[in-house]
Amino acid sequence: MQKKVSFHTIGCKLNFSETSTIAREFASKGFKRTDFGKEADVIVLNTCTVTGTADKKCRQAIKKAKKTSPGAFIVVTGCYAQAEAEKIAEIPGVDVVLGMNEKFNLFKHTDNFEKKKHAEIYSCETSLIENFDGAYSSGDRTRSFLKVQDGCDYPCTYCTIPSVRGKSRSGNIEQIVNQANEIAKKGFKEIILTGVNIGDFGRGTDENFSDLIKVLDKVEGIERYRISSIEPNLITDEVIEFTAKSDKFLPHFHIPLQSGSDKILRLMKRRYDTDLFRKKIEKINRLIPDAFLGIDVIAGFPGETDDDFNDTHKFLDSLDISFLHVFSYSVRSGTPAEKMPGKVSAKEIKLRSEKLHRLSDVKHSAFCKRFTDTSHKVLFEAAERGGFMYGFTENYIKVEIPYNPEFVNKIKNFVIKEIKENGNAGGYVF
Image (cartoon, rainbow, N blue to C red):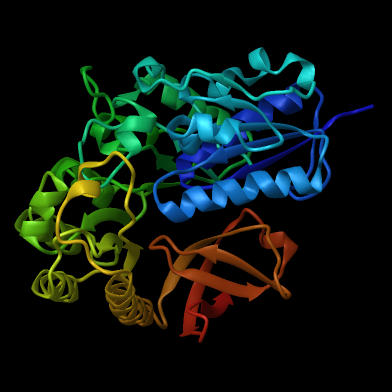
């Protein structure tokens, strides 16, 4: 009888690319994939630990897996598994905890998926993390997340990622291009380049991120690329200028700021100041005036006074940006920020987050409305919800139209006629 496997991913695009790669190995060995929450013989949970909320979601997912499939063999891997292996191993129902170095060696440690009396832990020492394992997602036929880099050498005081993902490392251009060609053969039209610190691609070699995107631009069959989160100090003029003239690399940047106060940036040990950040934004605006700019910001970092927060709000308000990804500061065990003075109350963090969300709504609405009565190329996705289908313009405006199966995985010319109350663009294909 064919065994069933389900997967559940918490966290970033990088995690999704890795889960999908693990899933392809199960498929090659004859397993049938089923949705998480339905009965399965094997359940693989790929976890995140970037915030306290992410940790909580991981624990809840393990309990849900055990409840829906009491006899399932449960594997827990990912960042939370790397950080808290012993705690996870004590949760009833867990059979194997895999650290980063063993994530793609799952079948070596499962003993034909026979339930264990006590959970086993493999390779959860950060010092052992040294391999770069290529990965890409293939969950739908429209977009694929392609992993180009892993790990991070930046010692930001609030972040646990270097301690769970290890040092910065990447594949070489030839390996990444080979995977892009595989993705193209599967019928994907768009690739999102992902990693922990993708601008650090090629560290320690004679290759760099700019070299990579120039070669990827020539891959046949892939019509669109998006660059996921990239550090402002690593957005070189060469990367901006190349994106400005490329037909495939889309006008869309996701850039972490974290704070608009230079004092707080120093406490965070970020590698730039607000002056450098402003210059990067202004250069993108100048060369790619229609670009979507999504900015990460943290509310309530230790030591952030009312004046510091107001500086952040004013700084963001002064920039020509499109959207804010707002994070409420969350204490991460073992980080320098955990012991910093000047903790901000949960109530105040919530108020500051809400104020930043309101600013984001204003910025995003103004950005989208700029493009009313303009035409764009939209890649439509397969999902149908309430009789509608969805897609994104080159500059990441979400579009919705009545479902038409002929448009799935097709790039269509689209005129934006309105921005609806839900924030999506309405219009027509021509």
